[in-house]
Amino acid sequence: MTIKVLFIIFIGLGSGLAVGGGFVAFLAVLGIIPRLTQLTKTMKYIRLYEWSVVFGAVFGGWFTLNDHIFYLWDYLVIPVGLASGIFVGMLAAALTEVLNVFPILAKRIGIEGKIVILVMAIVFGKIAGSLFQWMYFVR
Image (cartoon, rainbow, N blue to C red; front, side, top):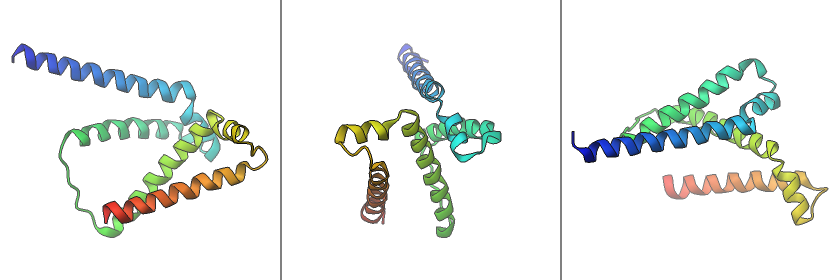
């Protein structure tokens, strides 16, 4: 191996460790996973949540580095996509709750008593954006 290849390997491993360390610190410092288990009342499955995030990050990184094409039955994609969306949505909800995003945003824009309307606007906006993306760009 040449010095150039060894340098590229060193840079790649160092970058991966930095990003992975930042991801773990982000989840650990903010307490996202424990808060998510509290919200869903599934505290006994906290290890499963943690390992799901770890394996998801590892396999996601691995699959993005390789060209993989999965040929799945159309109706099998629906529950997989639904489960993925639910998990990402719950993770995002736990993050916003931990950071108190909604009360701060409501106070800034002057609708302190109507946080439910703010949350529903964000939810419907997310649904509309996802449907637009899937109908326009994917199909």
